[in-house]
Image 1 (cartoon, rainbow, N blue to C red):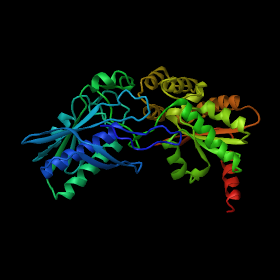
Image 2 (cartoon, rainbow, N blue to C red):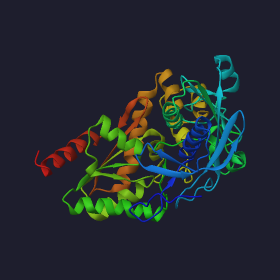
Image 3 (cartoon, rainbow, N blue to C red):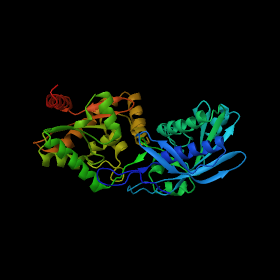
Image 4 (tube, rainbow, N blue to C red):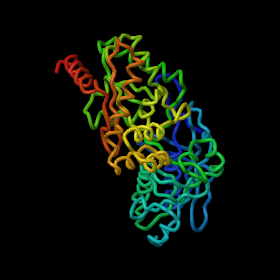
Length: 398
């Protein structure tokens, strides 16, 4: 049964991710394995800090294992995975050798916990993702969340032995064909990804209305300059790397163009975009809605700019064959072209941003990656950052 867990400021219902379902099912299965009693609900704290109390379904108990499921709920987000069941099977094991781990492609997520992918869980077939080729497409944050949930039950019931968790999603292979997984080289099922554990609705009008409202509120409280980030990656980078106050930051999701238009209409004097290369590289092609459903020209942009900076055909093809920008950056770095390519990319980003903004609005961008930190800045980025920071300090009387 689906559980409503809250709504955002636009009144749209939040949901919980496939990863949260997997962690909750694993926790419940281990609790029943060790407690030897059936449970009907399980509590889980997501990385976002939201507490979930989820119904446990389809429990199977044998002499060797316990398996149960939690149903995915996407809230008001139009998600093809809504309503599917995510299963976790928990079993005690005597040992798990590295050779077996390599053969079965499992993760040892803690000294005493092994995680495997079963039916409907996709496998990675291309280099460039966080997981190694051949392993289940379950990202590090989700693995840690599952490990913590299982470890909590092991400690509660004072179990010191080894546990194996196998995740499965019946029908996952069919559902995955309606997603972008095949393009990422994930085959045979769905990926278990995400960062917060919560599904936030992606209604376009709700999002663009929220962007307008957030910026309008800043303007009405006396701020005519602000920082703009697409989402969690940008917000974390602002806070942790740049020490910026979130109070003067607007989240724009994929709507770069709409955000610029809003800033102009509201009479803002300056906006500084800070974003991950995976989204912002698209700006160098003039793409102002960076959602993958609208356009995906990441490798094309990097490959063209690599060619412009003297890359040979082998390097250009290598970039084009990359699954994600992290892998492409590694290729460029290895051939000594990363800095020049990013300078070229930033010039085009500046061209399209200033063309959209016009003369009345100062605009700049900072592009980063998790591995390399700041990759590039447009020409006004440093001055706009300093102006905005100084203005904020003055407003707060510091």
